Length: 157
Image (tube, rainbow, N blue to C red; front, side):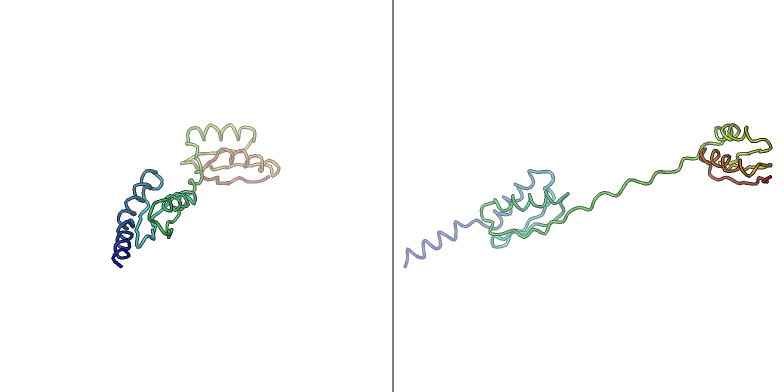
């Protein structure tokens, strides 16, 4: 009977303590930068992982590394995967400054007799007379210059 009690006590005292198992897991995980933020608790040999991983591979690696530690009976993997980064902002519309826009508008309207144009704060104002067939071509060439707005005050012949 004494031998049975002695061997049982020896067997229980050789079993790794939860605190030691936790320390071993934390040491192993902290060696990898992607896993350094994982938090570990151990209760009766059951290791519970919490925190955030960058991707599914990191999450699986944390679990596998934890399973390899002596004294771990099972692993509860409560790690979450980080949300993907937000998409880049949409392209902004570039408005041509007035000086260069004025020159470009002058060049675009020179082939249309009777058409005058002014530029103020990125807004192109068209005045005068134009043939109906020429209007689409003029509007396309002015739009290509990327003004803030086109105010069409033209009279169509």
